[in-house]
Image 1 (cartoon, rainbow over the protein chains, first blue to last red):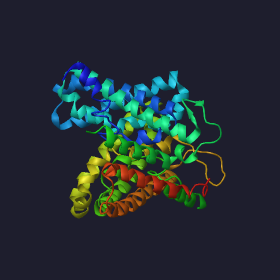
Image 2: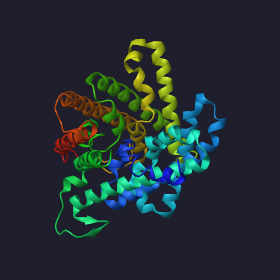
Image 3: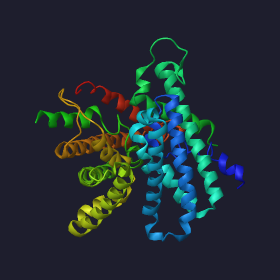
Image 4: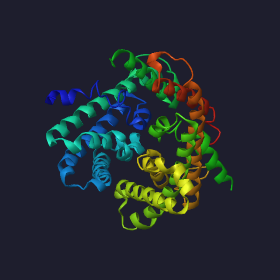
Length: 193
Length: 202
């Protein structure tokens, strides 16, 4: 597979949200607005790229029996780094995303890519895979965020263009499941060929 | 006493872990195809969430806080949970082989269930207020009750949803809706029903 192909496959063909259906919790919980979705996607991408790189480096020397605990510790280390960085530089964002930043540790996308890709590929390829899947995840979260923000509060990225209150349900829990469900229907219909 | 009651009602219905807090969605969607597997998974989750919350609470209180190591919470908790799940597996195998048989395949999956880590982190970081008192961190008793009630909420959502899905599988839905999409739309309607509980407990 070409280097460019490694990145672009995460957008549609192996989209983590709509095709692989991984990492549902942050996808549903943090997409109350476009900005929140985007930030959550970027935070996950940070951990994904770094853990992919390190795991591809250590994979040959880790005994098979303990590889899952080792990977989890590596991922947890980068999540802690991310937590400290976010608390220092963007405390507001850290507050809004809250619990879901430490929960990146148990996001199946990160461990899934480590198991399915990083432990048997080169460092460069693993980094590119992390970037590709990370962008795919960020894209889907942002799209869900945009749709929920338009329906829920009549604005996009905070810029209000529909006067009045939106449909509150779309900002709350039911809207998250509904928007994701219908987006998956559209994805099945048009993209999954 | 009334505070315990409020914690239980709030954790099961008002702030249901799946339908309002979006935790543990992957296993919720993954193993809810059959009522029997859903019941097995719920049992395992109840057990592990309650146990893990008590242990991580103590680890946090007596190990991380005195040594000012709170920033290691994420790493420490996930390790404790992973070790605990392994331990539960070994102990169950010896003590109660029948229960082990029933929960067996679900136990290893629970380590990566974000509901477990989510509840463990929530009880040591979030300040709660019930019955109009000052917001405060949970003490051990409240934390245990909260964890158990939350896992009951998980079981309730899981079993209800599995029941609906068994019927759903027999229905003729459009091709693009098959599988997960129709399941997600069903969860959305369930979440809407659970919204009716909001406001019951402040």
